[in-house]
Length: 94
Image 1 (cartoon, rainbow, N blue to C red):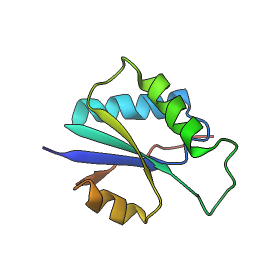
Image 2: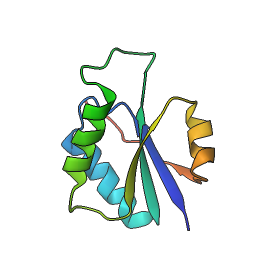
Image 3: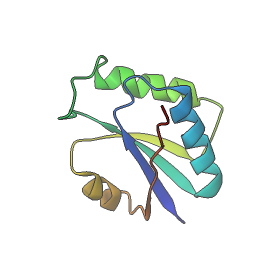
Protein backbone atom coordinates (compact mmCIF):
# COMPACT_ATOMS: atom_id res chain seq x y z
CA UNK A 1 0.00 0.00 0.00
CA UNK A 2 1.45 3.35 -1.05
CA UNK A 3 0.40 6.35 1.01
CA UNK A 4 0.88 9.91 -0.21
CA UNK A 5 0.46 13.08 1.82
CA UNK A 6 -0.68 16.43 0.48
CA UNK A 7 0.21 19.07 3.09
CA UNK A 8 -1.08 22.64 3.03
CA UNK A 9 -3.06 25.32 4.80
CA UNK A 10 -6.17 25.01 2.59
CA UNK A 11 -7.21 28.51 3.53
CA UNK A 12 -9.59 28.14 1.77
CA UNK A 13 -9.73 24.93 -0.23
CA UNK A 14 -9.88 25.59 -3.98
CA UNK A 15 -10.92 23.68 -7.08
CA UNK A 16 -7.20 23.36 -7.81
CA UNK A 17 -6.69 21.56 -4.49
CA UNK A 18 -9.58 19.22 -5.23
CA UNK A 19 -8.17 18.52 -8.70
CA UNK A 20 -4.72 17.61 -7.31
CA UNK A 21 -6.28 15.42 -4.60
CA UNK A 22 -8.49 13.65 -7.14
CA UNK A 23 -5.56 12.99 -9.46
CA UNK A 24 -3.37 11.75 -6.59
CA UNK A 25 -6.16 9.45 -5.38
CA UNK A 26 -6.13 7.72 -8.78
CA UNK A 27 -2.38 7.08 -8.54
CA UNK A 28 -1.86 6.13 -4.88
CA UNK A 29 -3.63 3.68 -2.58
CA UNK A 30 -4.26 6.32 0.08
CA UNK A 31 -3.93 10.11 0.10
CA UNK A 32 -3.76 11.94 3.41
CA UNK A 33 -4.56 15.64 3.11
CA UNK A 34 -2.61 17.32 5.89
CA UNK A 35 -4.01 20.61 7.17
CA UNK A 36 -1.34 22.71 8.88
CA UNK A 37 -2.64 23.66 12.31
CA UNK A 38 -0.66 26.84 12.93
CA UNK A 39 1.27 27.92 9.83
CA UNK A 40 4.22 30.20 10.56
CA UNK A 41 4.28 31.86 7.16
CA UNK A 42 0.81 33.39 7.27
CA UNK A 43 -2.22 34.00 9.47
CA UNK A 44 -5.12 31.89 8.15
CA UNK A 45 -8.52 33.48 7.50
CA UNK A 46 -10.31 30.36 8.76
CA UNK A 47 -9.81 28.28 11.88
CA UNK A 48 -8.62 24.67 11.58
CA UNK A 49 -12.04 23.03 12.14
CA UNK A 50 -13.52 25.21 9.38
CA UNK A 51 -10.73 24.34 6.94
CA UNK A 52 -11.11 20.63 7.70
CA UNK A 53 -14.88 20.87 7.22
CA UNK A 54 -14.45 22.74 3.92
CA UNK A 55 -12.12 20.00 2.67
CA UNK A 56 -14.40 17.17 3.72
CA UNK A 57 -17.38 18.82 2.03
CA UNK A 58 -15.39 19.54 -1.14
CA UNK A 59 -14.25 15.90 -1.32
CA UNK A 60 -17.59 14.35 -0.38
CA UNK A 61 -18.50 11.70 -2.90
CA UNK A 62 -15.46 12.49 -5.06
CA UNK A 63 -12.89 10.01 -3.75
CA UNK A 64 -13.00 7.27 -1.15
CA UNK A 65 -9.30 6.69 -0.48
CA UNK A 66 -8.63 10.18 0.93
CA UNK A 67 -8.33 11.10 4.59
CA UNK A 68 -8.04 14.55 6.14
CA UNK A 69 -5.76 15.06 9.15
CA UNK A 70 -4.40 18.04 11.06
CA UNK A 71 -0.71 18.34 11.87
CA UNK A 72 1.60 20.66 13.79
CA UNK A 73 4.90 18.87 13.32
CA UNK A 74 7.35 19.12 10.44
CA UNK A 75 6.07 17.71 7.16
CA UNK A 76 8.67 14.93 7.26
CA UNK A 77 7.41 13.87 10.70
CA UNK A 78 3.81 13.99 9.46
CA UNK A 79 4.84 11.75 6.54
CA UNK A 80 6.51 9.32 8.93
CA UNK A 81 3.43 9.24 11.15
CA UNK A 82 1.37 8.05 8.17
CA UNK A 83 4.19 5.89 6.76
CA UNK A 84 3.91 7.92 3.55
CA UNK A 85 6.32 7.30 0.70
CA UNK A 86 5.24 10.31 -1.40
CA UNK A 87 4.60 14.01 -0.83
CA UNK A 88 2.20 15.55 -3.35
CA UNK A 89 2.45 19.24 -4.20
CA UNK A 90 0.56 21.32 -6.71
CA UNK A 91 2.06 23.87 -9.08
CA UNK A 92 0.84 27.45 -9.20
CA UNK A 93 0.93 29.05 -12.60
CA UNK A 94 0.40 32.78 -12.77
